[in-house]
Amino acid sequence: MAAQDQVRIEANPKWIRGTVRGQTIVDSARSQFVWEHRYYPAWFFPVGDIGGELRANGSTHRHDRLGDATHFDLVIGERTLENAAWRHLDAPTEALRDLVRVDFAALDAWFEEDVEVFVHPRSPEVRVDALPSSRHVVVAVDGHVVADSSSATLLFETGLPTRYYLPKNDVRMHLLTPTAAETACPYKGWARYWDVTVNGTTYADLAWGYRTPLPESEAIAGLVCFYNEKVDITVDGLALEQPTTKFS
Image (cartoon, rainbow, N blue to C red):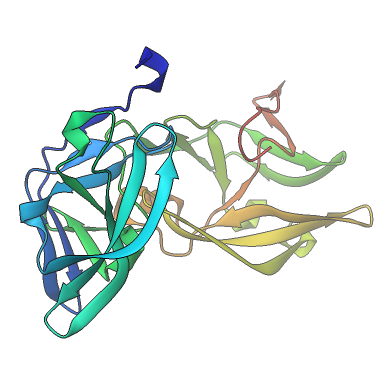
């Protein structure tokens, strides 16, 4: 197998548990991080760390590097969690063959040690720092200033450009209209969005914020952020280049 095709697997030192209606279904201090794609890893577990019966249901899927996956229903007493898990029984990487991948969404709650994890497993390589800053930040859309602040909170998240979260008092909130859009992040929580309308043009879901972020990102609670990729930002008078990311 070529180096670029090899599956990345690393031991996870954290105690991982998954529950359904308060009952522990997954209980493992032996899980493995497996990078199915480059953005974040999945948890794979030894078969013995899964409660209940894994019952093959005839479904399969194909992964380019992990090989064919056999799907299982997870049967716990009289309860059946359909299509809740899969195994790569003939994986090119031998270490995968004895492991089970449990669908994150199939269970009600997941915990690292005693801290609940949301959305998907958190990568051991991602760090999030939210730092108050007195830098002068100006945000413009189509030449129109929509925010001007010297009380920003800068959020540094591994793999993403610096985000500038601004107090609402420093944002022209009359130009922003709430939308129904919502996204979720395992490091920050659930975000709501605003359209921005300037010069008669509406830019959909251009700004976002977190009412009640997760504890590690609580410093951005109630603040407003704009996509660096789509607006013009100057910091202390220096114009920033618009980065190219998956959000561009």
